[in-house]
Length: 592
Ligand code: NOJ
Image (cartoon, rainbow, N blue to C red; front, side, top):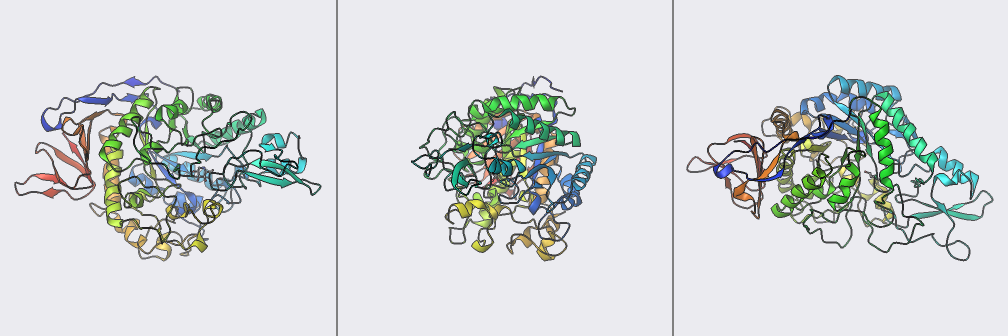
């Protein structure tokens, strides 16, 4: 059921050092759970392994749901677990209605869902509608049926350019590197048509001008909605519709994490960081019709089911079009994720995100890590300029682990105090860094291969989780096997050595999520603290009765005596006059 968002006026009445008179966001609540939810991304192959083959699985996830309940999240989002040849870790789906045997069975999924629901945790699943696997029955039929057939019309097959069709139909590049077209051999053995793949050649793009494609995906939505899922994270939500005629494009091609070689992230006034994909393959107006139709499908079901867009779109006002009242419900805020660890750009992106979403009545989302980017504990250890390489090699300048973790915890508290919905990526609650020195022989990301090894790719952020410091494979599964090697340092980050330890990253996340819930920060307000409204190196805001101060400077920030410390991302400092201060790269939540 849809409800109209309600506007709440700012409750800030404080005076003195904690006064906050510049209201940025007046608060919103429509009553739907997703407006202020904390949603935890489970990457199934790396969360927990029940059957001992070294790859995580659905039963492994079910066995660890108590960890997520104790953490205090509202929902999980599961990356793909569908039948797939795993050429892109499951983002190459061969059957949208089956669980891959690697991950278990449909019964295992039903059990996971029931257990999660029993714990009060909602479940969002991944939907990959831009492309199928080349092993999907539709693509196999398309290859067999030949040019001009209705089977080929489900994909983007085109004749080649050049005298004998030997040249690609246009000059588009794959986001994973290399060109975006592959030529097929026709049934009679002759070189034939080309098909478009914005990603790997095993991920042919569907043709979303074909009504059959629409009908099929509506049925896929219903299949999972009928099973009881609470929503869908929609992969490449900005890519399904291409410009008419597939015109050439000479602009830069963003990598899979949204980075574009040679661009300066900067921080223009709207908070854009250069993280958007552009050109004729992305963010075409026609894509919104699809989401209006899907919105109507979800609205037939009870329980406020939600659609979240994975759309690397900028500026933020353009991204907000995906979450207009009759379209999707949330969109990942990659402009926030890609903002440098600098006060000015951070304030700009916070205000820009809230303004853009307020304009359409949608909640803003916040996210710092996922399975496509270097984890924020490593990224922020590289420097403060917002570097975001597509993975790291052992020969690259390495992140400073201690600085990275310190900043990551500070960035997380800065994020979790904000109004809106926050996404966490598995393992960030342990403070995990990337594996930054994987041997090339074990890499699996197609981006590594398609760039001929010039990009390390995303394997480093996908390492199996450490649950127990003294067990083989750090307790990932019963045999010690792990599909990617874990760095030795993961023993120090294991869940068991952090549980119950005050000040550990895990306990800090738990405390923050509990306080966020108790103070209703997710549906709250945001006003800049007057004292730091223009500060170069401090971000400070008030959300209801909570004040959040993130100190990015190299000198301590003194906490007013009247304030009670609720949560801090690191140790606070007691001064000579018994005053408390927030040290460098630390965020504190105060009740004041
Ligand atoms: C975005 C997903 O997050 C990423 O992991 C995947 O490789 C691409 N889409 C292609 O599906």
